[in-house]
Length: 221
Ligand SMILES: Nc1ncnc2c1ncn2[C@@H]1O[C@H](COP(=O)(O)OP(=O)(O)OP(=O)(O)O)[C@@H](O)[C@H]1O
Image 1 (tube, helix red, strand yellow):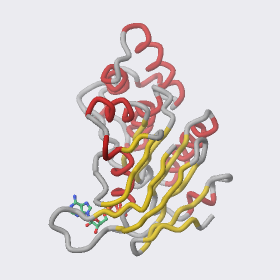
Image 2 (image 1 turned 90 degrees about the horizontal axis):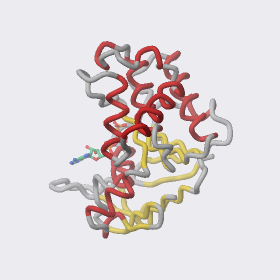
Image 3 (image 1 turned 135 degrees about the vertical axis):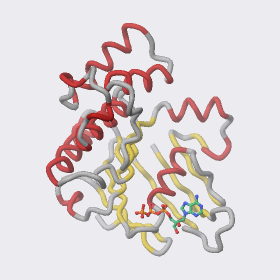
Image 4 (image 1 turned 45 degrees about the vertical axis):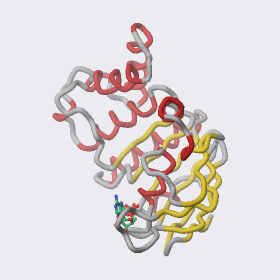
């Protein structure tokens, strides 16, 4: 699903590489936690997989395609296979819950009756059917993150990238979001979840844990 081959990343103007010679294999159907201290490069690694950042050295392969060598149209096609969840939800606050999920589908070329059906299904999945017509910015943080998860899952992506998805949530909502990602994994998605929270892996049987520290990535479970 994802392969990093001897990846190095140096940001423009920075003196030090975030990491160098990093290797990672994310097998289809796996659930991998990406742990490590603040500044270790978790977001950078996720951005490299999304193609938002390019590696300075080495290669990032997603679904067999080299993200550094893709034309924009091919890159867009790969990105449509990804579902992404962020710490800060990134919803369109003035739009309804329904529209937030529907717009993401439309961007990917899903139209008409399919959109309606897929949005309804995604909102059922996260238990927010009754909030479909409510403005997104009136929801609680936990509800907003569930909308973001519905948006990410509506197309049933092969790969879910979650960057600190529980970072702004209380323990109860953290558990709820974790369960949703576990459910998506059980339904066939590969999941990469970056987190500071050391308790999440322990609550996720069958998951692997990769630790990013001092520019090195080590599989610790
Ligand atoms: N756009 C950028 N330009 C320059 N340096 C950057 C940029 N983005 C990140 N960095 C630097 O790269 C390093 C890794 O940052 P990154 O955000 O990937 O770490 P992280 O593990 O996700 O941290 P956190 O857990 O605090 O979110 C940090 O030293 C950061 O300052």
